[in-house]
Amino acid sequence: LSHLGHGYDFFYFVQQWSSSYCDTKRSCCYPTTGKPTANFTIHGLWPNYNNGSYPSNCNKNSPYDGTKVSVLFSRLQVNWATLACPTNNGTKFWSHEWEKHGTCSESVLDQHSYFEATLHIKDKVNLLQILEAAGIRPDDNFYNVEDIKEAIKAGTGYAATVECNSDPSKNAQLFQIYLCVDASGKDLIECPVIPKRKCNSSIQFPIF
Ligand code: 5GP
Ligand code: 5GP
Ligand code: 5GP
Image 1 (tube, helix red, strand yellow):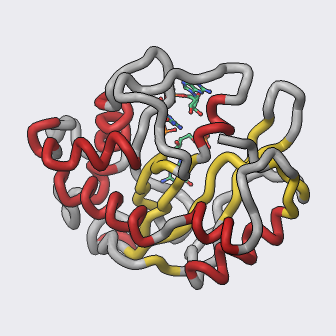
Image 2 (cartoon, rainbow, N blue to C red; image 1 turned 45 degrees about the horizontal axis):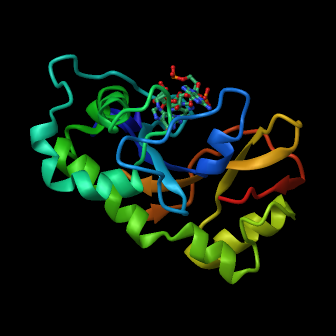
């Protein structure tokens, strides 16, 4: 049981493409702080086991506490924007992610460190810049998913998993990108287990 050390083996670091969240039947609501930047934003940093399963909601006695992360609010608003309705300032999303996932890596990263570490990884991995350098742009065109993966491998050194969803016309589109991070929350690693996520071979990269 390799996870006995700190209660998990590694993290999935998941980023979302706003347009693909919003451009669905369910639609979305921009946060009260305004439309997010034209870049990928953070969905979460999720502790996981090497066997593919994962712990969740690990500590009921450790609720989200905004006073512990207030120095990070401006960075969270830009990089970890909430798009769910109804419109709110992000607290609901951050508290959901902390309580469901963050509490499971609390022995390594306390609340402030968890959000700080996630923002730090986001700063190091500029997915939009990496894709644009390979000629893959959010221009509503369709791209080969293998080309997207190759660009991310070239730009980060690591293999990514691409998750797609569908717009109302049933086009498959780039929705989320999964990378893996070591249990310290610091460095990218190759994923010990590949998440099973759906995609077509050719996918749309919607305009922001
Ligand atoms: P979905 O079913 O929409 O892909 O995932 C719903 C939620 O379950 C995710 O947002 C995340 O909180 C959690 N989840 C799904 N798959 C995984 C996984 O492979 N590892 C971890 N740690 N959480 C996951
Ligand atoms: P997970 O899928 O991580 O368990 O949960 C995501 C939860 O956070 C959902 O309950 C969803 O309503 C909420 N949420 C708030 N803002 C966002 C957002 O921008 N993206 C996603 N994926 N979920 C969000
Ligand atoms: P959560 O319960 O876990 O609210 O959301 C369940 C699923 O619905 C997640 O995949 C989440 O991202 C999605 N979702 C929740 N609220 C919204 C919303 O306002 N707009 C969109 N497009 N998806 C949402």
